Image 1 (cartoon, rainbow, N blue to C red):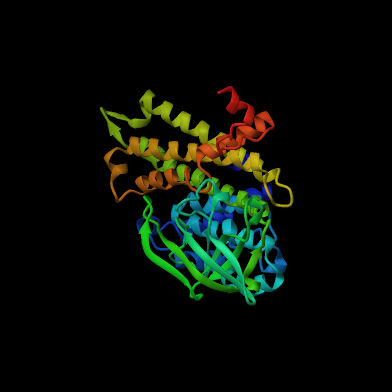
Image 2 (cartoon, rainbow, N blue to C red; image 1 turned 60 degrees about the vertical axis):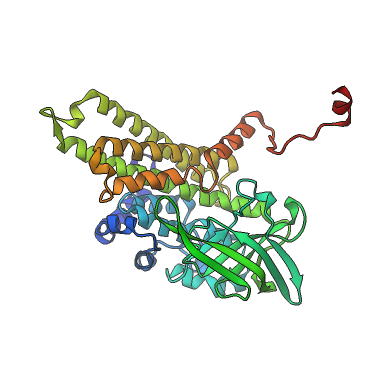
Length: 392
């Protein structure tokens, strides 16, 4: 990774990695085996100044760049994959969107505990009938007295079982222009958090049910017409996703590399077999190329917001490279990698999920194709024109 960094960035990467080796390396396997959010890690990262890296100093952040946050998430995740999720929660995703568009009052009230690692914020976007087609969401916000009544259901939200704050995509009116977002706090009247379920990687999530859940006006983040702004912030979440995928794959790759040098079969170290050499060469190529696309997306960001195209390219490349690295590492370790005692099998399950979460690989390819042809390709079925009907 160091080849694409400036001297200051390299020093930051090395110091952050040293912190991770000293504070997080021990227990990395145990954390991966637990579904709960690692609150102990959150407090350590907060104390080290690694939460809120890109938030302004006025908001309690470090005033750093998107590149700084990507360096931190990779340095931490390459040592302890599960701890990288805490860097994500404290710098990307919901907290970054909130910090970008919240009022001063909202930030003063809610940001401090997030930046101290005492709370975590979850996003409620996906619904039973609205996933990739986010404009089809049906969770509604209806005006009521001095606030709104929220009705609907959200699923698959990362940290939704542990979170105290929830950034919920809602519909204030019809069409894409009617979509915005609100902040709902755990314990709000009419808000019910379902029993925990588990993803394939073992992490927990809960259904979020809103039955005329009442919130005050001050909990509106972006009103009707806010979807485009929300999705611009969502690009940052996707880069955090991409960085973790790349780093988790790198973690597995490094384990496999050490194993290939130490393990002997047929009187030779595994690294001496050409078939395995080619695996390592292919994985190294993919990881290096994906890393460059990731850093390019951050470097070309405008006002801290990466473009839709750069984000799609980086996430697709990192997701595929991360999964390839983890999957090949498991194959090289054989039974040792397939064992529950190995973190490599967790890396496979972890990287596989990111090819779905935060924008599936297929959706990313659609975005890239639109940039190639400089036109939009709507996924909704085309309604036949009157002349088409007569011709048939």
